[in-house]
Image 1: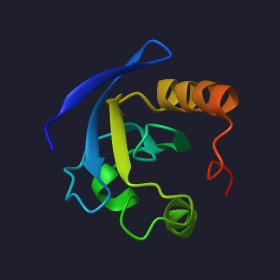
Image 2 (image 1 turned 90 degrees about the horizontal axis):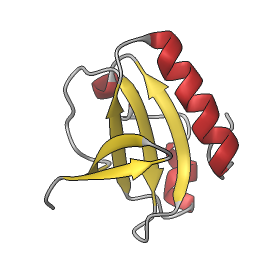
Image 3 (image 1 turned 45 degrees about the vertical axis):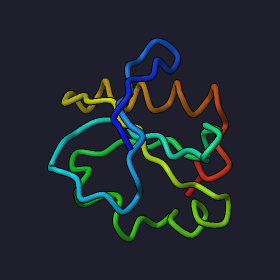
Amino acid sequence: MSQQTAKVLGYDFVGPYSLNTLFKKVAGIYLITKSGGEIIDVGETENLNERIPDHERGDCWNDNDGINLWFHFKNNRDQRLTKEKFLRSHYNPVCGIN
């Protein structure tokens, strides 16, 4: 699968990545999507490599056919939290609540 860039509410996300991808230690915001692009989860992380495997909402991703991850690189934690909140409020993702 070739890497693409998608604009989501004005933010550039790269992907799609398989949820089984081994990621580097990068900080940012991630989207979990179905094959058709529907966003089922939004989250933020300091370390993508540690966050995705064994995620507490992984069962919800599976139950809702989540197969792709898109990523927006952002090191500043406060900015990540603000963007995550904005994206969640707009999309109200089915797996977005712990």
